[in-house]
Image (cartoon, rainbow, N blue to C red):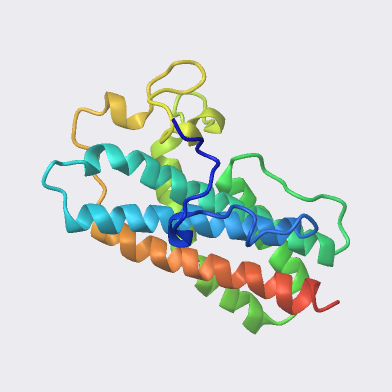
Length: 210
């Protein structure tokens, strides 16, 4: 059996993991990987929308959600790290895997960095769709018994949390449904806007020597 980490004679059938990354560019590397996670989520949705005769959407939705949420996490951490450097803070990445908390940190950093009301409003417009999604998501994953959701961001990786308590969709009697056409529209916008923000602060400020 051929090794997975090996060449194909057709260059278009190879994936080069280090062509777009650089050992000296940590934040840029995060953005590169982030694009891959968001792109894979979008591609999976497009393929399922094109052909769902076998109802594979019911199982492929889990990696779709995981990839999309992980992309959000990485984008927000890249933005946080960039702004922390610009603002001369000692932290790099904050918030573990709690993407709502990380988003709140990003909002705080943007408000601290941006001086004009217009720039702050522009950021809010670019992230309103993301904010709405996070509010919707956390209503689903929040553990109502103790008000915590630390272990529940893994809802798309495992059917239960670290205490083996079922995630929200397992115990729900009624159907828990995702409109994939709506998902495609929403996450295409979320991904585009987060990439715009991340690259704006990285290239227009940090690498420009602000």
